[in-house]
Length: 242
Image (tube, rainbow, N blue to C red; front, top):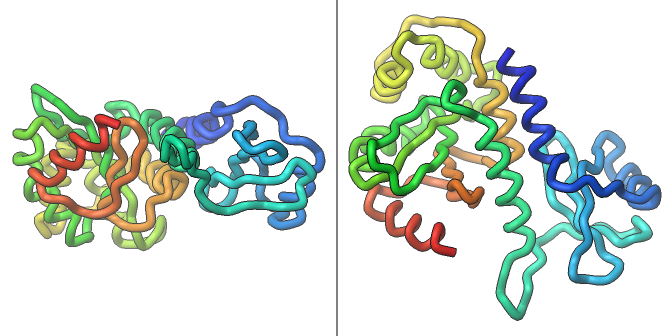
């Protein structure tokens, strides 16, 4: 159930960004480079003759730029030199925001304070050292008004002990307690059940996660790596103000 529902949601998150149909020339240009990839959306850019496209590939939705005739593909960030705005990162943030927001309260493991100033999504791996360090300070993050919603990203892949540990935590009667115990190095009895772990992992891939912990803010911005509570709060104050 989780896999079907969330996989559909991930596709909608990418394709719903734009309903504009790519031209035949652009489709053929992409097909020449990557036969298995497909263009999920296309939009105009401030540059005449250049379109922004989102391509569905093995790594999820990726942002590129292509000439109207489909002959030239550009891979890089487009920055407005006047406003200094990173247009490409803005697009990627929109994709990430849609991806993580598809996971409701019943599809993630939450550690949320009563008075929440910031809400972050953390792609995590049970055995990741810095993931464990972050979770050991979860009470401190909460006291600062930072709510944490965990999504699993087993770094070794879907057929690995890390994946099995994630499933065990998810299938436990008390997921918060199981998460804390697992991240403390306590071995849990293996459990299986219907779960969203694969969908979360694929969402992480689509969001550009390459390591853990990876933090996605409510505005979709990605912060790779661990930050202690006070420094994370300082960073959030800056990044969420933009």
